[in-house]
Image 1 (cartoon, helix red, strand yellow):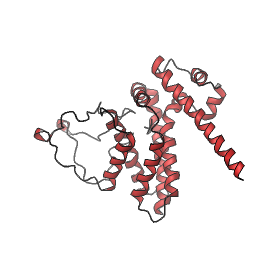
Image 2 (cartoon, one colour):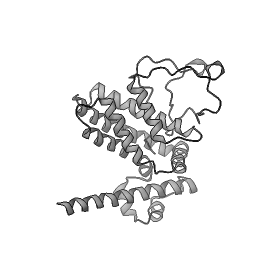
Image 3 (cartoon, rainbow, N blue to C red):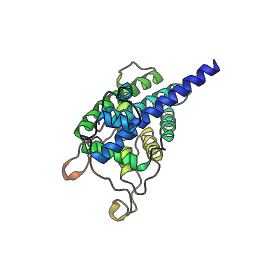
Image 4 (tube, rainbow, N blue to C red):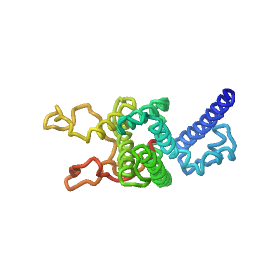
Length: 258
């Protein structure tokens, strides 16, 4: 049995390596040539694989990019199911996210930013990202429902998954606008910690007039990497309306890809 388990583990590692190589090739070629000038055959060849192998992993060249977020949240769901039954939900969520995203910190900063730039500039990737987000969010909601003993598709797990999905997006956007960037997993954990605490207001800024402190992180834009508003609806004067409940979803958009 031990050799069988070792063999299975090796096969899974080989599959993960092939998937990663194909995704890396898609990111590199898309950045160098432009997305429209990059074909599935080009991506497969650059990764040392056949087109048939590519099709075994991805349904399209867009899927090679946006499926990253789906995979990450699927891993979170699996870890969530293995957390102790008596552990509070939000504690289990934070631990699961930290474990998953700590394991993928090896993805270098330039590659992360290349993905963001590709999605922002490519309508086909933006559309694919929306579909990937829906899939990832549904999967996470199912895991939360199991964890809390709620009905599948119930309001609480669906709402919680939607808030977390958006929190990943906002964390990523904040990370992109921070120089020098901290580890992404730290930004994400801080975001989830604030959600778990009920989103208490931050202390007043030390900058004059309560504005952003000099040298603080500057947002790159009001759009996330999938081209959707990261701050919810914005009222007149460019100020976001005050939200009284953590559960009020600011809108739905990426996969944490990414």
